[in-house]
Image (cartoon, rainbow, N blue to C red; front, side):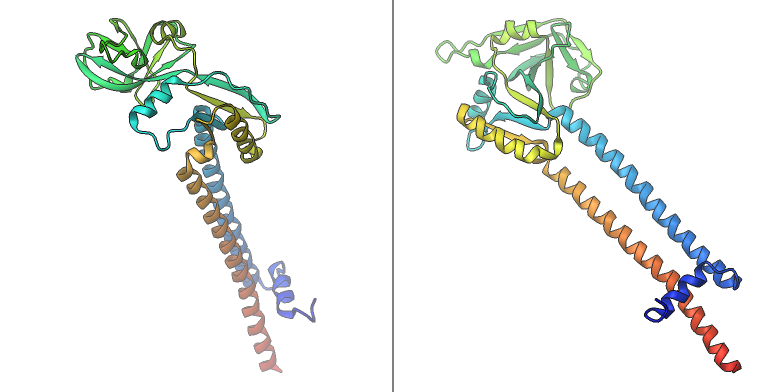
Length: 287
């Protein structure tokens, strides 16, 4: 090694030699800065990983690993709402990677609050003990609510222009905040108003998330044989911008870590090489 890389060998030797205190101090200081910088990068990377896991966990709780819904491509808004509310029955799908399947009932409808019309979703909530619950952020601009009139759009009769509906004088305000305008309804009340036992979408949770792509393809093939109007998407396909941002973040941190590591290593070696050359010049001058 001394013959092949003499300067590199001497640089390593001076890094741990205490004969020359100046060289030793500068090397130790450079190594300390290297360790400190890399440690800070690892800490930041760990924080970002924690943030990623937190956000990813919330997305998976909302959509599941795989999300099954009606295909709305090429449909006008009325057709989309009709297919959405029509729903589908329990799917006969199997895959070894499936942990559990949650079927959700939801209706896209219209409500009248204090004589003002609002387009909302009504979702069945098995944990709700009261007829209806409204997230507080949906009514934060409404001081007093006299009544809530909820309609069943599937019951609309074009001949009579009559739609089944129900007026609620009592309701419960939920502390949970939701991004979409959703009113939650107990299973008993949901069945009484909408009289629809079909499901709007399904959330599939997997044993092994690394197999999500192959599992999604397999379920898509199975669903196409059952109902061609349905489609399956992974949570990554539903949130492409978030996934792209995470991938870019990992690439940037990896590149930054690599560049700093190479840079700081080069600084240590260059310091030792510089001192070694200076000592060699001084030695030759004395000779």
